[in-house]
Image 1 (cartoon, helix red, strand yellow):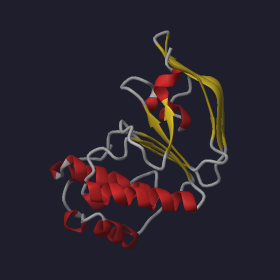
Image 2: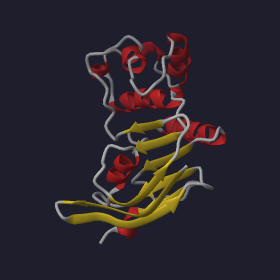
Image 3: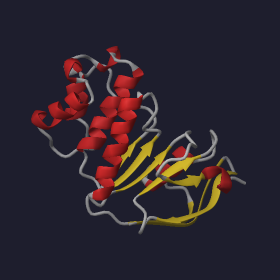
Image 4: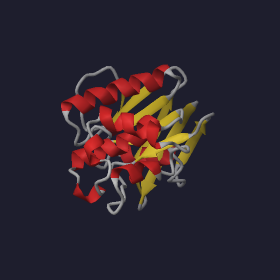
Length: 193
């Protein structure tokens, strides 16, 4: 589904990372770790097709599509919580009946009609997670999805990861958290020149 060979990316004639090779054929999830500027976000943008100016080989095969979520929530402050989810172009046509149960699970049902500009950063991150939860893609690229989440929501997100993987999806996400967990890691520091 996803394979790279000697993947490299440079900015202003300086390599951010180089010679990165991995194969997700037998792996459901990878966590990208590394220092600031090590190329985590750049790699996710390359894999999702946003950045095209890379070197090396990238082979990507998906039946249900790609879902990318940047480290910023990209919410429209003038829209309500419901509107931000309902009009998310990354999602297939969804109904409000699909959104409300997920709002309840993330304890946001009382905020459904409130403009996003009035929410905390943690609440905004939860709204972004709802789009991830409702997505039917089979390949996910998530930039720092655990940022600004409380412990309960972080645990829920790990469960959602597991459900997506069990249904055949693949996930690559970035994190500053180097603690041991059940995720396989790619340390981007190892690919810096």
